[in-house]
Length: 242
Image 1 (cartoon, rainbow, N blue to C red):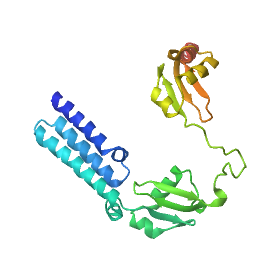
Image 2: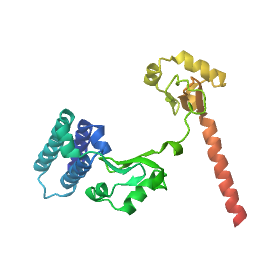
Image 3: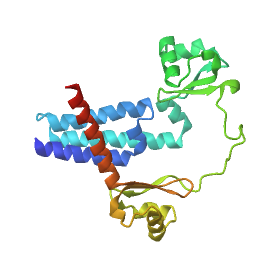
């Protein structure tokens, strides 16, 4: 049984990698259902001794293969995308709820208002458009008067960032590929660390390059001190309350 579990786990891991991030993200109802089915088949192989291992494995591979083929077809054909994934539906337009769209998607008002609250929207009147996406989530466009002000609106600095915030040190280990991707060097990193009085990369728990090219660092000793400080205050509170 242990061997069956290990083999089914490895097979599921490999097949999940082949299917890709879209399947793992369960972006549509189709991917949600296939994800559940694939997991169910894998658990059947691992947990039910009566299930022939080879037959179960073939079934798992075929299910993943068919899912992969459907994904390729939907990439090539818009009609196939609509058939398998459906298409987004406008449920609110210009502050008006489209009752026919709600009925078509079997969505009642309590569900709609809940989804709006999840988007921090409490008044339907403030909505220009609300679109029910193919993954069941709601996208909302507010009316212009209630939209948040942008940096351009308030004439703030809109200079694009130089770098994408990227981790370059984790638990004392240098992440060379991230430095290369940012077109930075180890020498540049060491100079930044020396300005912070850090002589050894191994003393750094976490370091991240910021958008403006500065370096954010957290030292290992600081982490330990923070933990000891929290522990001290916790023990002190227990002592004073006893």
